[in-house]
Length: 331
Image 1 (cartoon, rainbow, N blue to C red):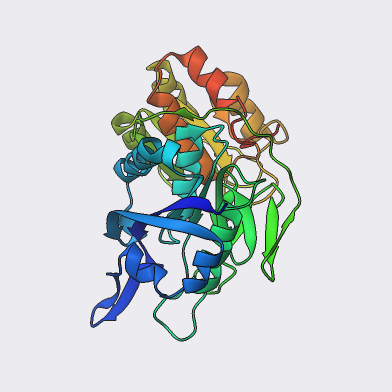
Image 2: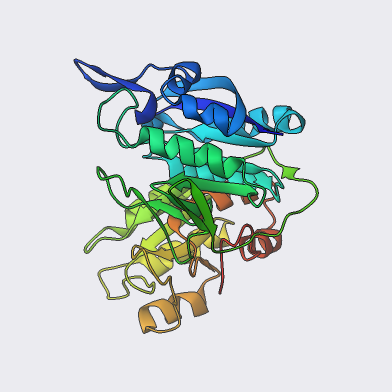
């Protein structure tokens, strides 16, 4: 029997039409499906539309809507395909990986760099591949399917702004590839019996990108207004320590008040390792901060929102942060 898949529309380039003001999402999920009738040979598809927006406008509230839609329909379908804009797709994939854990059914996010109604587009291939993978017996959990690659939801990053090879898997292999209508599985995921759903997120998480000469008062301001701040440092991770800077004092002040600080790196591959250089070692030895290691920024942001939606207790926050969920951290 054919698998029954629910297609969830959120907008994005794949649903866009050309307007005088630029591309704008206007096509519904049903309209998109009409461009790829071959999908009916793979599976039975039903659709629902939770929004129709540019993914630049995606916020944590939309992640809750996506997770709730899947939870409410979980027993009725064999898998789910979410049509999503590419700009924030990696964040949404990470968020859903924490909000829907151990799903034995596949939850696939996909989209396109060109609208589906254009003559030259990657939309049709990405959608076909996504439904093919969502119907595959070995598929489970949250993934992005794009340009023939299957990427774990906690490891995806958009690395190209225009070309069709838009997404990369950061510090983790591709789970599979889809080639000429065939699925070549590289990593087999173990299936659990039942998923665990969460619907609480704390959006008071900010990202501070270190640049040469930046004022530590900016970090202090961000910590004052948020419950957690991720510092995207250089290289393996560290903080300026020469006399003009006061970062360590700022970090010590706010962590003593219960704020959560995570050190990560601006470099996409290989992760952080703060013990290597004095600028990192000194900070970590003096102040209680967390280190992202090989997690990507998208996953760190969403994991913190999920953790802080569950607890404010420092010991529990640390334990949950270093607990591997959907292979998001290996250190």
